Image 1 (tube, one colour):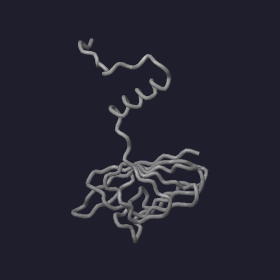
Image 2: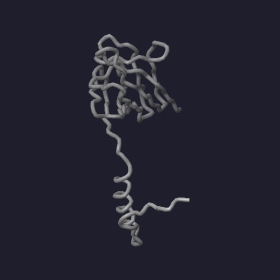
Image 3: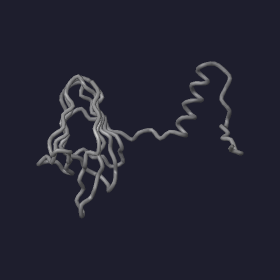
Image 4: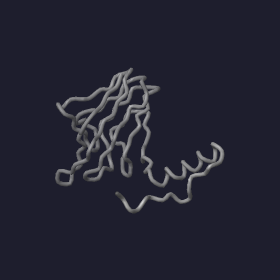
Length: 142
């Protein structure tokens, strides 16, 4: 069906396991974009997400509340991931002190409680010259 086949240069090694692992690491680094992420361990109302597409919320030591972001560009998407079962992660709807405010479906805070993992997908939309972050989707797993 396809006349041209993809060629991988150089070809995969036929040596030991460590040599194959190193080749796979080099190969994947050329075809997969690593995530640009920032990790947080405390509350924030103005986390700068300029240049980032992921926020890892490490709740291992305490609850984390996110009331706003900063540095967003129009149509930027950011995924927020709760990376530990311990403690909770809260997204605050229209937080008064939030720099670039977050708006949730139902106009209420969203809480991922302890003993759950989850993620939020947010999109930055400008209204005039003001950026707003809208929660597009959320997922939870116990």
